[in-house]
Length: 314
Image (cartoon, rainbow, N blue to C red):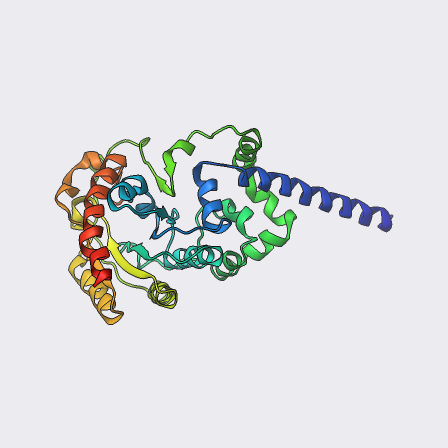
C-alpha cells in the first residue's frame, strides 16, 4: 500500500512538473505584452543604452518609441507595476545578470509612495517563469520568502498560476496575441483603455522615506556606480503637481535633492509641469494616460538631451 502511494506521488509530481514546464514555455513564447517584456528583461542578452526604472507610473509615463525617435537612443522601460524600491532594485540586478549595463538609468522616484514598507511583489505569479534567473530569485526571495518554494515546488506554485496564466500560455503556444499585447512597446505600456480623471476628493497627507525604501535607493545608486551607469532620479507628472495630495512636498523634494547632492547624481522634480492640471491627461492623480505620456515624453526627451546627456559629455 505504501509502495503504491509513493509510486502515485512520484507520478503526480512528475506530471505537475511537466504541466508547469509546458505552461511556462507557452508564456516564454509570447512575442508581445508583459511576458515578452519580462523575457527581454530577465532572460535575453540586451544592449540598451537607456533604461527607465520604477513603478507603473514610469511604465506608463516614458514612451520609449517617442524617446528613441527624439534622442536617437535605444531605450527600454524596465519599470514594473507596483514596484517599490526593493522590487525595482531586484529588477535592475536581474537585468544586469545577462545584459550589458546601460549608459543611462532614469529612476522614477514616487515620493508619495516612499513611506509604505511592505513585502509585496504585485502580480508575483507572473514572474514564476523567470525565477531561473538566479539574481531575480535571490532578490525576490528577500522580499517574499515564498519565492524559493514557488520555484522548487510545483504543488505550491500551481494553485497560484491561475486560469489567466494558463490562457496566456495557450495564446503563446498558438501564437495568438492577447487583448493588451499591442499596448506594449519596449517595456512602455500605452494606457488607452481607462477613462480620464474625474473629480474626487482627496485628503492631503504627509509622506516620508521609510528606512527600507532609503536603503534600497542607496543600493540602486551603489549598483549604478559599480557598473558606471549615469543615474538620474526623476519625479514625473502628478495631477496638480501633487499639491492637493501632499502636505510636505517641499520637504520631501529637498530631501531628495540632498540625497542626489551627497551621491553626486542628478534629481529633477518634473511633477509640476504646466499641463499637470489637465484632467484629460490622467486616469488618476498619479498616472497619466497615453495622451499625457506622449506630452510628457516629448518634453522629457528634449530635457534628456539638454540636461542629462549633455552633462555626461562634460
